[in-house]
Amino acid sequence: MIDDLERLHDAGRQRVAAATDLDALHEVDVEVLGKRSELSALKQKLGAMDADERRSAGRRLNEVRSALEVHIAERRRQLESDARRARLAAERLDLTEVIDTTELGHLHLVTQAHDQLEDVFVGMGFTVAEGPEIETEWYNFGALNFPPDHPARAMYDTLYVEFGEPESTLLRTHTSPVQMRVLEANDPPIYVVCPGRVFRSDTPDASHMPVFHQIEGLVVDRGITMGDLAGTLEAFTSAYFGGAIHSRLRPSYFPFTEPSAEFDITCVICEGSGCQTCKRTGWIELGGCGMVHPNVLRNGGVDPEEYTGFAFGFGTDRLSLMRYGISDLREMFTNDIRFLRQF
Ligand code: DAH
Image (cartoon, rainbow, N blue to C red; front, side):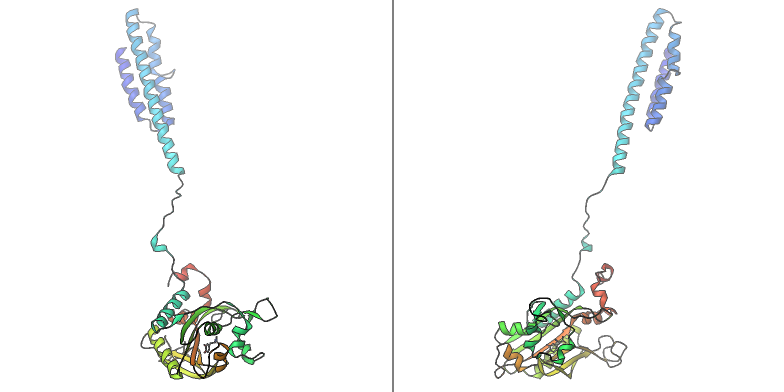
Protein backbone atom coordinates (compact mmCIF):
# COMPACT_ATOMS: atom_id res chain seq x y z
CA MET A 1 0.00 0.00 0.00
CA ILE A 2 2.70 2.51 1.01
CA ASP A 3 4.69 1.71 -2.16
CA ASP A 4 1.60 2.26 -4.27
CA LEU A 5 1.01 5.60 -2.54
CA GLU A 6 4.59 6.76 -3.18
CA ARG A 7 4.28 5.70 -6.84
CA LEU A 8 0.98 7.65 -7.19
CA HIS A 9 2.55 10.68 -5.50
CA ASP A 10 5.51 10.75 -7.93
CA ALA A 11 3.41 10.02 -11.02
CA GLY A 12 0.80 12.61 -9.98
CA ARG A 13 3.42 15.30 -9.40
CA GLN A 14 4.93 14.69 -12.86
CA ARG A 15 1.54 14.82 -14.55
CA VAL A 16 0.68 18.08 -12.81
CA ALA A 17 3.98 19.62 -13.87
CA ALA A 18 3.42 18.43 -17.47
CA ALA A 19 -0.02 20.07 -17.81
CA THR A 20 0.52 23.05 -20.18
CA ASP A 21 -2.88 24.75 -19.89
CA LEU A 22 -5.81 24.99 -17.50
CA ASP A 23 -7.96 22.46 -19.40
CA ALA A 24 -5.18 19.86 -19.27
CA LEU A 25 -4.68 20.54 -15.55
CA HIS A 26 -8.39 20.04 -14.90
CA GLU A 27 -8.20 16.60 -16.56
CA VAL A 28 -5.16 15.69 -14.49
CA ASP A 29 -6.99 16.84 -11.35
CA VAL A 30 -9.95 14.51 -12.10
CA GLU A 31 -7.75 11.56 -13.02
CA VAL A 32 -5.39 11.89 -10.06
CA LEU A 33 -7.79 12.89 -7.26
CA GLY A 34 -11.26 12.12 -8.65
CA LYS A 35 -13.72 9.37 -7.60
CA ARG A 36 -12.34 6.99 -10.22
CA SER A 37 -8.69 7.67 -9.49
CA GLU A 38 -6.27 5.03 -8.22
CA LEU A 39 -5.96 7.05 -5.04
CA SER A 40 -9.71 6.76 -4.38
CA ALA A 41 -9.49 3.02 -5.18
CA LEU A 42 -6.73 2.64 -2.57
CA LYS A 43 -8.89 4.43 -0.01
CA GLN A 44 -11.60 1.82 -0.51
CA LYS A 45 -9.04 -0.85 0.39
CA LEU A 46 -8.25 0.75 3.77
CA GLY A 47 -11.37 -0.75 5.29
CA ALA A 48 -10.07 -4.28 4.78
CA MET A 49 -6.75 -3.61 6.55
CA ASP A 50 -5.93 -4.22 10.19
CA ALA A 51 -6.03 -1.26 12.54
CA ASP A 52 -2.27 -0.45 12.74
CA GLU A 53 -1.65 -0.75 9.05
CA ARG A 54 -4.81 1.21 8.34
CA ARG A 55 -3.74 4.09 10.56
CA SER A 56 -0.29 4.53 8.96
CA ALA A 57 -1.53 3.88 5.40
CA GLY A 58 -4.49 6.22 6.01
CA ARG A 59 -2.22 8.99 7.28
CA ARG A 60 0.13 8.58 4.30
CA LEU A 61 -2.82 8.54 1.90
CA ASN A 62 -4.12 11.84 3.30
CA GLU A 63 -0.62 13.34 3.11
CA VAL A 64 -0.23 12.29 -0.54
CA ARG A 65 -3.67 13.60 -1.33
CA SER A 66 -3.09 17.03 0.19
CA ALA A 67 0.41 17.23 -1.31
CA LEU A 68 -1.09 16.60 -4.77
CA GLU A 69 -3.84 19.17 -4.07
CA VAL A 70 -1.17 21.73 -3.24
CA HIS A 71 0.75 20.88 -6.46
CA ILE A 72 -2.40 21.29 -8.52
CA ALA A 73 -3.32 24.58 -6.85
CA GLU A 74 0.17 25.97 -7.43
CA ARG A 75 0.24 24.82 -11.02
CA ARG A 76 -3.21 26.38 -11.55
CA ARG A 77 -2.07 29.73 -10.19
CA GLN A 78 0.97 29.62 -12.45
CA LEU A 79 -1.03 28.73 -15.58
CA GLU A 80 -3.61 31.41 -14.79
CA SER A 81 -0.96 34.06 -14.49
CA ASP A 82 0.69 32.86 -17.75
CA ALA A 83 -2.70 33.07 -19.48
CA ARG A 84 -3.34 36.56 -18.12
CA ARG A 85 0.06 37.74 -19.27
CA ALA A 86 -0.48 36.27 -22.75
CA ARG A 87 -3.89 37.96 -23.00
CA LEU A 88 -2.48 41.34 -21.96
CA ALA A 89 0.33 41.04 -24.49
CA ALA A 90 -2.17 40.23 -27.23
CA GLU A 91 -4.44 43.14 -26.29
CA ARG A 92 -1.63 45.66 -25.87
CA LEU A 93 -2.11 48.92 -27.78
CA ASP A 94 1.11 50.66 -28.65
CA LEU A 95 0.32 54.33 -28.22
CA THR A 96 3.89 55.55 -28.39
CA GLU A 97 4.61 57.89 -31.29
CA VAL A 98 7.79 57.09 -33.12
CA ILE A 99 9.30 60.21 -34.64
CA ASP A 100 11.51 59.32 -37.54
CA THR A 101 13.68 62.35 -38.16
CA THR A 102 14.19 61.37 -41.80
CA GLU A 103 10.43 61.97 -42.23
CA LEU A 104 10.49 65.65 -41.20
CA GLY A 105 8.91 67.91 -43.78
CA HIS A 106 10.71 70.51 -45.82
CA LEU A 107 9.98 73.78 -47.55
CA HIS A 108 7.73 73.75 -50.62
CA LEU A 109 9.37 74.01 -54.01
CA VAL A 110 8.13 77.58 -54.51
CA THR A 111 9.39 78.67 -51.09
CA GLN A 112 12.75 77.09 -51.86
CA ALA A 113 12.89 79.00 -55.16
CA HIS A 114 12.06 82.30 -53.40
CA ASP A 115 14.72 81.66 -50.76
CA GLN A 116 17.33 80.94 -53.44
CA LEU A 117 16.34 83.98 -55.50
CA GLU A 118 16.46 86.19 -52.42
CA ASP A 119 19.92 84.83 -51.60
CA VAL A 120 21.17 85.72 -55.09
CA PHE A 121 19.79 89.27 -54.93
CA VAL A 122 20.83 89.85 -51.31
CA GLY A 123 24.31 88.84 -52.47
CA MET A 124 24.08 91.65 -55.02
CA GLY A 125 23.19 94.22 -52.34
CA PHE A 126 19.38 94.11 -52.55
CA THR A 127 16.99 93.95 -49.59
CA VAL A 128 13.68 92.05 -49.49
CA ALA A 129 10.29 93.78 -49.21
CA GLU A 130 6.72 92.49 -49.08
CA GLY A 131 3.32 94.01 -49.71
CA PRO A 132 -0.33 93.09 -49.14
CA GLU A 133 -2.08 90.49 -51.31
CA ILE A 134 -5.35 92.43 -51.21
CA GLU A 135 -4.67 95.74 -52.89
CA THR A 136 -6.47 98.86 -53.96
CA GLU A 137 -7.03 99.64 -57.62
CA TRP A 138 -4.61 102.55 -57.16
CA TYR A 139 -1.58 100.48 -56.13
CA ASN A 140 -2.23 97.64 -58.56
CA PHE A 141 -3.01 99.88 -61.58
CA GLY A 142 -3.46 103.64 -61.11
CA ALA A 143 -0.14 104.46 -59.47
CA LEU A 144 1.62 102.23 -62.01
CA ASN A 145 0.48 104.54 -64.81
CA PHE A 146 -2.48 102.50 -66.03
CA PRO A 147 -5.03 105.26 -66.75
CA PRO A 148 -8.68 104.31 -66.01
CA ASP A 149 -10.09 102.17 -68.84
CA HIS A 150 -6.61 101.77 -70.33
CA PRO A 151 -6.62 98.60 -72.51
CA ALA A 152 -3.52 97.28 -70.69
CA ARG A 153 -5.73 96.63 -67.66
CA ALA A 154 -7.45 93.94 -69.69
CA MET A 155 -4.16 91.98 -69.80
CA TYR A 156 -4.72 91.19 -66.15
CA ASP A 157 -7.74 89.01 -65.48
CA THR A 158 -8.48 90.75 -62.23
CA LEU A 159 -10.31 89.22 -59.30
CA TYR A 160 -12.14 91.98 -57.46
CA VAL A 161 -13.04 91.90 -53.78
CA GLU A 162 -16.46 93.06 -52.64
CA PHE A 163 -15.28 95.97 -50.52
CA GLY A 164 -15.86 99.70 -50.88
CA GLU A 165 -16.70 101.10 -54.30
CA PRO A 166 -17.14 98.51 -57.10
CA GLU A 167 -13.72 97.50 -58.55
CA SER A 168 -11.84 99.55 -55.97
CA THR A 169 -10.37 96.57 -54.10
CA LEU A 170 -8.78 93.53 -55.69
CA LEU A 171 -6.44 90.58 -55.27
CA ARG A 172 -3.17 91.90 -56.65
CA THR A 173 -2.58 90.66 -60.19
CA HIS A 174 1.19 91.14 -59.99
CA THR A 175 3.91 92.06 -57.46
CA SER A 176 4.44 95.46 -59.13
CA PRO A 177 2.24 97.33 -56.58
CA VAL A 178 4.95 96.59 -54.00
CA GLN A 179 7.19 98.93 -56.06
CA MET A 180 4.89 101.82 -55.22
CA ARG A 181 4.72 100.93 -51.54
CA VAL A 182 8.53 100.77 -51.39
CA LEU A 183 8.87 104.13 -53.20
CA GLU A 184 6.43 105.76 -50.78
CA ALA A 185 8.17 104.41 -47.71
CA ASN A 186 11.81 104.95 -48.71
CA ASP A 187 14.06 107.57 -50.22
CA PRO A 188 16.50 106.48 -52.95
CA PRO A 189 18.87 104.73 -53.27
CA ILE A 190 16.48 101.76 -53.47
CA TYR A 191 17.55 98.21 -54.28
CA VAL A 192 14.76 95.75 -53.40
CA VAL A 193 13.23 92.47 -54.50
CA CYS A 194 9.65 91.60 -53.58
CA PRO A 195 8.57 87.94 -53.81
CA GLY A 196 4.93 87.01 -53.35
CA ARG A 197 1.63 85.47 -54.30
CA VAL A 198 -0.48 86.95 -57.10
CA PHE A 199 -3.98 86.18 -58.40
CA ARG A 200 -5.79 86.16 -61.74
CA SER A 201 -9.12 84.72 -62.78
CA ASP A 202 -7.57 82.01 -64.93
CA THR A 203 -8.94 78.50 -65.34
CA PRO A 204 -6.35 76.02 -64.07
CA ASP A 205 -4.47 74.12 -66.76
CA ALA A 206 -0.95 72.78 -67.23
CA SER A 207 0.53 76.28 -67.42
CA HIS A 208 -2.03 78.52 -65.65
CA MET A 209 -3.30 78.77 -62.10
CA PRO A 210 -5.53 81.43 -60.54
CA VAL A 211 -2.89 81.72 -57.82
CA PHE A 212 0.78 81.85 -58.69
CA HIS A 213 4.01 83.54 -57.59
CA GLN A 214 6.22 86.33 -58.84
CA ILE A 215 9.32 88.17 -57.78
CA GLU A 216 9.65 91.86 -58.46
CA GLY A 217 12.84 93.90 -58.57
CA LEU A 218 13.17 97.68 -58.19
CA VAL A 219 16.27 99.85 -58.33
CA VAL A 220 16.13 103.65 -58.04
CA ASP A 221 19.33 105.67 -57.77
CA ARG A 222 21.22 108.47 -59.49
CA GLY A 223 22.34 107.69 -63.04
CA ILE A 224 20.70 104.26 -63.39
CA THR A 225 20.54 103.17 -67.06
CA MET A 226 19.18 100.36 -69.18
CA GLY A 227 22.76 98.99 -69.12
CA ASP A 228 22.45 98.50 -65.34
CA LEU A 229 19.20 96.61 -65.92
CA ALA A 230 20.75 94.32 -68.55
CA GLY A 231 23.84 93.74 -66.39
CA THR A 232 21.80 92.98 -63.27
CA LEU A 233 19.61 90.47 -65.10
CA GLU A 234 22.67 88.80 -66.62
CA ALA A 235 24.41 88.61 -63.22
CA PHE A 236 21.28 87.17 -61.62
CA THR A 237 20.80 84.63 -64.41
CA SER A 238 24.29 83.16 -64.18
CA ALA A 239 24.26 83.23 -60.37
CA TYR A 240 20.95 81.37 -60.22
CA PHE A 241 21.18 79.01 -63.19
CA GLY A 242 24.93 78.72 -63.70
CA GLY A 243 27.36 80.19 -66.21
CA ALA A 244 25.87 78.46 -69.27
CA ILE A 245 22.61 80.45 -69.02
CA HIS A 246 22.48 84.02 -70.35
CA SER A 247 19.81 86.68 -70.73
CA ARG A 248 18.58 88.95 -73.50
CA LEU A 249 16.06 91.78 -73.79
CA ARG A 250 13.34 92.21 -76.43
CA PRO A 251 11.29 95.40 -76.87
CA SER A 252 7.85 95.27 -75.28
CA TYR A 253 5.25 97.43 -73.60
CA PHE A 254 4.22 97.97 -69.98
CA PRO A 255 2.53 101.18 -68.78
CA PHE A 256 4.87 101.46 -65.79
CA THR A 257 8.16 101.28 -67.69
CA GLU A 258 9.57 103.26 -70.59
CA PRO A 259 11.31 101.80 -72.48
CA SER A 260 9.92 98.34 -71.66
CA ALA A 261 11.29 94.92 -72.49
CA GLU A 262 10.66 91.23 -72.11
CA PHE A 263 13.63 89.34 -70.85
CA ASP A 264 14.51 85.87 -72.05
CA ILE A 265 17.04 83.40 -70.69
CA THR A 266 18.91 80.63 -72.47
CA CYS A 267 16.68 77.54 -72.48
CA VAL A 268 17.68 75.64 -69.35
CA ILE A 269 16.67 72.32 -70.90
CA CYS A 270 18.82 72.39 -74.07
CA GLU A 271 21.15 75.23 -73.02
CA GLY A 272 20.46 77.07 -76.25
CA SER A 273 20.71 74.40 -78.91
CA GLY A 274 16.94 74.26 -79.46
CA CYS A 275 14.36 71.80 -78.11
CA GLN A 276 10.63 71.29 -77.65
CA THR A 277 10.44 73.40 -74.48
CA CYS A 278 11.92 76.51 -76.16
CA LYS A 279 10.17 75.78 -79.50
CA ARG A 280 13.63 75.43 -81.13
CA THR A 281 14.56 79.07 -80.42
CA GLY A 282 17.11 78.33 -77.68
CA TRP A 283 15.45 81.00 -75.49
CA ILE A 284 12.72 81.02 -72.87
CA GLU A 285 10.68 84.06 -71.93
CA LEU A 286 11.03 84.73 -68.21
CA GLY A 287 9.47 88.12 -67.45
CA GLY A 288 9.03 91.82 -68.05
CA CYS A 289 11.29 94.75 -67.23
CA GLY A 290 12.19 98.29 -68.16
CA MET A 291 13.14 101.76 -66.96
CA VAL A 292 10.70 102.98 -64.33
CA HIS A 293 8.27 105.45 -65.93
CA PRO A 294 8.66 109.05 -64.68
CA ASN A 295 4.98 109.08 -63.72
CA VAL A 296 5.54 106.08 -61.45
CA LEU A 297 8.51 107.76 -59.76
CA ARG A 298 6.45 110.91 -59.30
CA ASN A 299 3.50 108.93 -57.87
CA GLY A 300 5.94 107.44 -55.37
CA GLY A 301 7.27 110.85 -54.36
CA VAL A 302 10.59 110.58 -56.22
CA ASP A 303 11.85 113.34 -58.52
CA PRO A 304 12.45 111.80 -61.98
CA GLU A 305 14.81 114.67 -62.84
CA GLU A 306 17.11 113.58 -60.05
CA TYR A 307 16.68 109.82 -60.02
CA THR A 308 16.15 107.08 -62.57
CA GLY A 309 15.44 103.42 -62.02
CA PHE A 310 14.73 100.04 -63.50
CA ALA A 311 12.27 97.32 -62.55
CA PHE A 312 11.64 93.71 -63.47
CA GLY A 313 9.16 91.00 -62.58
CA PHE A 314 8.78 87.35 -63.40
CA GLY A 315 6.87 84.22 -62.40
CA THR A 316 8.68 81.90 -60.03
CA ASP A 317 6.46 78.82 -60.41
CA ARG A 318 7.51 78.48 -64.05
CA LEU A 319 11.11 78.82 -63.00
CA SER A 320 10.79 75.75 -60.74
CA LEU A 321 8.88 73.84 -63.43
CA MET A 322 11.73 74.41 -65.86
CA ARG A 323 14.44 73.74 -63.35
CA TYR A 324 13.02 70.33 -62.40
CA GLY A 325 11.40 69.39 -65.72
CA ILE A 326 7.86 69.33 -64.25
CA SER A 327 5.24 69.32 -67.00
CA ASP A 328 2.12 70.46 -65.11
CA LEU A 329 1.86 73.62 -62.99
CA ARG A 330 -1.11 72.14 -61.10
CA GLU A 331 1.22 69.63 -59.42
CA MET A 332 2.63 72.51 -57.38
CA PHE A 333 -0.71 73.10 -55.67
CA THR A 334 -2.07 69.58 -55.10
CA ASN A 335 -0.10 69.00 -51.88
CA ASP A 336 0.47 65.39 -52.96
CA ILE A 337 3.19 64.24 -50.60
CA ARG A 338 4.59 61.82 -53.21
CA PHE A 339 5.23 64.77 -55.52
CA LEU A 340 6.51 67.21 -52.87
CA ARG A 341 8.85 64.71 -51.30
CA GLN A 342 11.00 64.60 -54.44
CA PHE A 343 12.34 68.11 -54.04
N1 DAH B 1 4.03 93.05 -63.56
C1 DAH B 1 4.26 92.51 -64.88
C2 DAH B 1 3.35 91.31 -65.11
O1 DAH B 1 2.95 90.68 -64.17
C3 DAH B 1 5.68 92.08 -65.06
C4 DAH B 1 6.61 93.26 -65.07
C5 DAH B 1 6.91 93.92 -66.22
C6 DAH B 1 7.17 93.71 -63.91
C7 DAH B 1 7.77 94.97 -66.28
C8 DAH B 1 8.03 94.82 -63.91
C9 DAH B 1 8.33 95.44 -65.12
O2 DAH B 1 8.61 95.28 -62.83
O3 DAH B 1 9.17 96.47 -65.13
O4 DAH B 1 3.03 91.01 -66.21
